[in-house]
Amino acid sequence: MCPKWATNLLDSSTGQADDGPIVGCAMTPASWISQIAPVVHDPTDGSSFMVFESYMDEAGIDARAPFCSVAGYIAPKDEWERFESDWRFVLNDYMRDVPEVQRYFHALEFYGNYPKYRRWKPSKRRSYIDALFRVINDRKVALFLSSVDRNAFFSLTEDERRYLTGGLHNGMKWKTHGAPTKPYFLPFQFCIVQGANIVREGDKIFPIMSHQELYKMKALELYKQMLDSKPQMRCRNKLADDIVFSDPTKTPALQAADLAVYWFSQLN
Image (tube, rainbow, N blue to C red; front, side, top):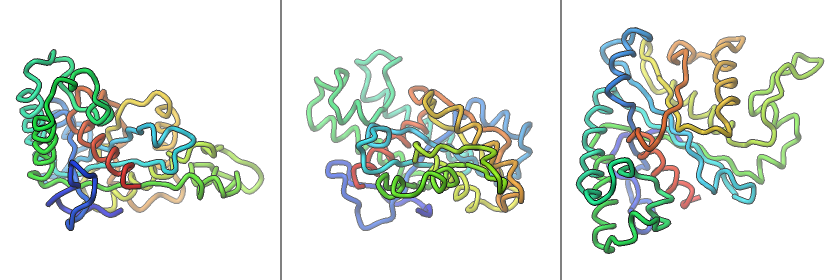
């Protein structure tokens, strides 16, 4: 799904898409990304930095789930800094009675009525989630999403699934074997490429993903393979040489992306 600039995302009570485009927001930790990016990646003044959220909820990991989804956000780094400030303000305002270490958003906790929310009245819950959506909608940030139908994926041959998830064949045998049992790596690649395709020449995309032990090593391997591919991808010069994994409880951007993945899964 190609990104569109923000006006609205989803109605937070019903999960139904409104008449506007499906859009959203996320951000990098402003305290360090803005400092290291000029040194490591030599961006232009208008460079955009993307936080690429790879969080997979149960609908994506469970083998019985019909879809596997990935969501990514992109915007100029200045927007990430403003976003982070606004997002944290909402969390602190509504969670004054919650220990600071628990002041983060996780969709499955919120919609699953975890302990820190159980004493909240319905009016507070609605006000809280609306406030988070406003933070997303008030920034010039864009969301793009990709989802794969598991039944369609597994209807392919094993060789086809290997190829689609990063397998390389030299005409005689597989040099790399891909991940034929993990449809996740198909939308993962799609979002990386689509993110790079929408920024200007000279800009750099800096992918930051939610820490995910199950897929981390394969994601790193596949990202490097994409960077080193022969012939080179047309978007290669827009991609940073590194992919970073971050704790979503400490990164507001990944919390927003988690919210997007949750509703995208519900819509699927």
